Image (cartoon, rainbow over all chains, first blue to last red; front, side, top):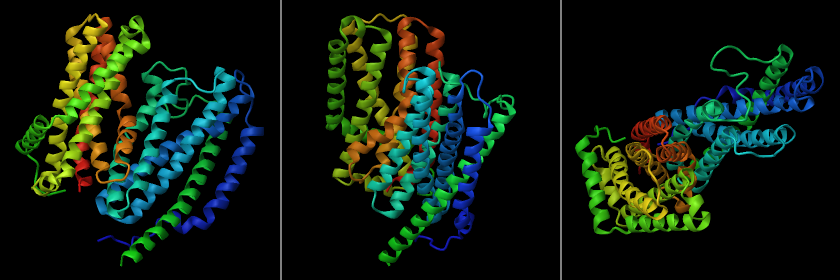
Length: 233
Length: 226
């Protein structure tokens, strides 16, 4: 029997406020990234794409970790709320990972001279992207609700192993990609304080955008779940 | 989960049943052997004899062939179960889901080992490969063979009775198998060219991935078997 009376997630209560707050934060972050942060001594103006690229990278990790936690939640409790959270986060995560790859490619052209190179970080990120596309494909091809949720949850748990591989690929393998400057194994961030603050504001702004999209998508998914269960009964 | 703990006896029983079925109707094995043999032949034609003999190229083609072969053999194995509904009987047994997953992994590893030995022998003969470190090559080969089935069986379990299963299995399995494929390819190339430290390093990575996915698989995959 499927539980349908799960307590609402805080995001759903905050949902009407999330989008305006996220937009305001994104406006502040954009202003800081374009006008307030200093020009990089080596890369010049092109470096400013890190204020989009790094938050997108962070969110792709976050989104798939949320898929992992929601998958554990579904396998543990069988509450549809967790399945709604997993699919919503996976969809937003795939969107952000796609944008992360595109932003990296736009930065690579003036910096490395090519749109794409077979660098371990690029390849492992693309593999992660394809893996979660497969996750969404598996969901779209399964018709039974319980079966779809359980199988997707198993994949959501297994696929999370790829996240540390993506992040640490620049250390483990010979990579031309820049080494981690924020989430480092040892020591703090190596960024200039002004750049660090700008990056921090943008990370917060993008995280709010993620939460706003997650809240909207979950709202749709919960309505869809209720419809399926009503039709069944 | 079925509630009753799975025992080694049940796992071996499922694996033996699988191997007997494969011996009686070796269509999966025959398809995998033909496929890998064809790929080795195509490699020497496509790359030319000089390039095909390079350790990196030869080992990459070999492991890609083995990964595809593992996928073929596993899909055929589950198709056989579904055709006569035999899978339902195994699942109904106490501890049947865990035994089904682990037994399949064990049996597929044996079948993939046969394919790998045949494809390896063919590569060595046809490409006249020089092997600097035979012991290391066997170690990489054995660990590579053990590292593939937990993921391939997982992908098959997740797509049981799902539309477009034939396309979905590689889409789900191959991205997860990238680290194993990379480690096996680099390890085999290192063993062929005489780099003992690299061969052992990549072997360690293969062993770690085999262990991680086997434990993860045995812990949560049975929940998805219906």
